[in-house]
Image (cartoon, rainbow, N blue to C red):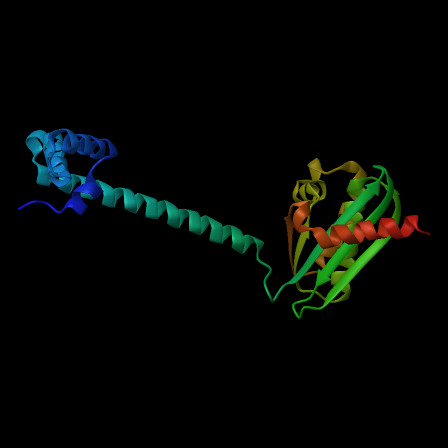
Length: 222
């Protein structure tokens, strides 16, 4: 009994399909018959049925591998999204600081959001210093605001790799010029039961960045 043409086409390789069309054209036979002949020749002593069975198994195996890769990718994505998630029961804060030029006049921008959705913002000029000083002062202002409002679980986001790395490094590797500010920030952090500090790219720290820039514009206009 002839094997269904749709099955043969699904299991045949591209080169076998091309060869079958050429054979059907040259010999004036039906494409279905030509494809069977090509695949039978390909099967050699194995037999057409076993060849097709092997290929079905190979296709199923490849589909399973593809599915597993998709599941792994989905799991990694879910973990990444969970890491970026802002939980409803947590206080969240964003900070940014800038120096114009560097060093120069410093400005900070701060956003604090309560679990209720209420938001407090700071946009302020803080005098002279470099960008790291400005970033530390912005974080300091955010923590003061959080302590003032009795935040108990705070997730802090900032785009300053220097400040975040300095806070997460050992004391022996800290930046000497920022020692006093680091100590002040650490003392404020101790007043909040649970604090997480996370680095984010500048593109995801837009509001704090805007507030720092607004402080700069406001100063130049006065």
